[in-house]
Figure (spheres, rainbow, N blue to C red):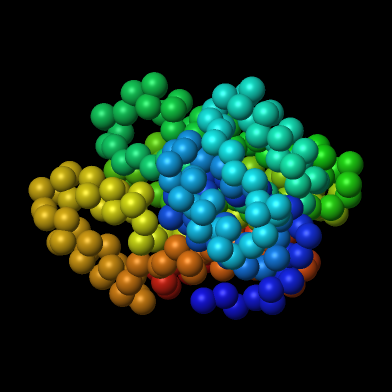
Length: 266
């Protein structure tokens, strides 16, 4: 259910990465219903087309651009930004929703896996943001929302590599926010816990296998550790991201907004 005015993001060009994932998908729908011009990107061409078709029922085709991209490839990143700006103009809002999960014990990790996860969740996201940020600096305005995680605020067993990548996102968000606000640009992060997405279900599946229990037992464990006794929904995360893109959040700067169902309070 949309909770914002249909013109809350009118004429603002928003780029959503990782749009084919559960949170990115719902974020794209949320900002589309708020009047934004919208660029969506992801690796999965088939899923991206499905999302594009769904969005066309909510918004004018001329305000929508969909483009597959591999954000770990510098040329793909540059082409995405160049094409998006040619199609819809200055990118005034960036949602960094692209990412990957990975749960392994410390003794199981190798350098290739660590570098892969850090590249997807942090380095490539940083480099894409830099391209957008330089243009925002020229315009003296813009909003950036990074999708981090509760795993970027506290460690958990079997989560070393993923947590490290999300701690990097949170630290980058805070540091960049202090630089960016001098140019009229706000940078924030959203830190959800377990969200009812394919990525979260895969994470719970891995935990079940590691513990030698059923997926149902692992899901029950996950939910029982949350005071609200449930996983968050992608829509709840998307609405939080959308809020941070609006003029209703002008003095929220460098924050890590938690969506934890009460499990993390600090």
